[in-house]
Every structure is written in structure tokens, then in C-alpha cells.
Amino acid sequence: MIVVLMGPPGAGKGTQAKRLAERYSMVHLSSGDILRAEKASGSPLAGELAKYMNAGELVPDEVVVRVMAKALTGGAKDGAVLLDGFPRTVPQAQTLDEQLVETDDAIDAVVVVTADEDLIIERITGRRSCPECGKAYHVKFMRPHKAGVCDTCGAELTQRDDDSEDVVRQRLSAYKRQTEPVVEYYRNRPGLGVWEVDGTRPADEVTASLTEVLSALKAGC
Ligand code: AMP
Image (tube, rainbow, N blue to C red; front, side):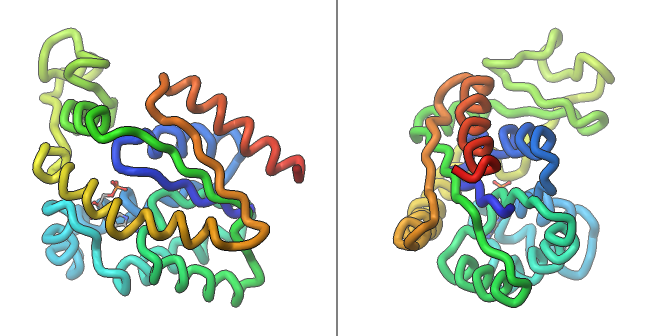
């Protein structure tokens, strides 16, 4: 089973993807996580990735397609795959289709987690995380006991390079311009279910809705 999880930055895709992948034993392939790891690795590609990612722009298709094809070959072998943040442009979606034909696979469903712009900006600009243990915080919605310090390790919390307001606005504009057409691309495909789930609700409610969708898919409804 291959499920594509889409939605603007800050809709809660990452959190939901982790929960779903665990619940349904799916391989979770997040293009953002994969590209961030490559950027942090100091590889020859890292500098180029930083240029786009720190500015909130999409990484060029040929780079993303190459990196994701490699991840997908490893992941798809074992069955169920949850694609998170990929494809993000129509050319990426077309290339993915071609690759899936080669491996005799197909996308089973597309799920779009939605959220409005003001909430997205508040959610993303307040995000912080611990560089030691990875624990996530929010300056308003999930505060640490002591401002700026991890409750578990005492390390100073950090903010993602691309979580500033200017960059978030840029990321949102990239989503509207380049990724919303991908939703339309899939909506126009006969027989492919495109589901929408309201991501403005509390995370557990969103998980419950997504679970209904995936359970129906697994049951072949
Ligand atoms: P995310 O963690 O999904 O918000 O992605 C963070 C950043 O990684 C994005 O702002 C882009 O610069 C880059 N990125 C992630 N996925 C893609 C993709 N499918 N195509 C192009 N750029 C991507």
C-alpha cells in the first residue's frame, strides 16, 4: 500500500505521519527529514540544499527525485509506504508515477491535512526542539518548565532554520503555487481516492480521522 500524505507546512503532517506509520507498520518516508539529514551531513550536496531550504524554497525537482527514488527503492520492498512531503510539484508526481509503473506499484490514496494560514504561522514560529533528545516544544502550546530549556536534558532549545515568520510565508507561498496543483493532479485521476482531513483540530482528533481513512483503505473499502 502506498499513501501520499499532503498538506501545507504546519498542518501537523509530520506528527501524524509518525503515528500512522507506527500504527499500520508503514515505512515513513519524509522528504523534509531525508533532505535535512543530507543537509546536516556535510556532503557535497549539503551546501546547495541549505540555499533552498533556509530560504523556504523548494529544492529542485531533479535533486529531490533522485534522493527520494533511492529511499523508495529501499522502503517499497517491504510493502506499505507512507510518503510525507513528496511529491510536492507536478513534475515530481509525474516522475513518481513513472517509477511506480516500473516496479508495478501504484498510489492507493492521497490524504490532505488542511490548516489555515494564521494558525500555521503561530504553530510553526513557536516550534522549538531539544538538540540532544529531539523532544518537541512550543512557546505557547507546549512550554518547557523553564523557558528555552529542555525538561529532560537541560539543553538549550533550538528553532529550525526555516521556522522564522518570513521563511514560513515563503514556504506557504511555495505550497500554494507548486503543491496545490499536485492535489488537483491526483483529484483528476479516476479511481484514486483523495481525502481531506481538518488539521486545525487537536492532534488526537486528527489522528482519529486519519485512522478511519487508513483502516477503510486496508479493509479495501
Ligand atoms: P518539510 O520538513 O516537509 O517542511 O520540508 C522542509 C524543506 O525541505 C522545504 O521547505 C523544502 O525546502 C525541502 N523539501 C522537502 N520536501 C521537498 C520536496 N518534495 N520538493 C522540494 N523541496 C522539498
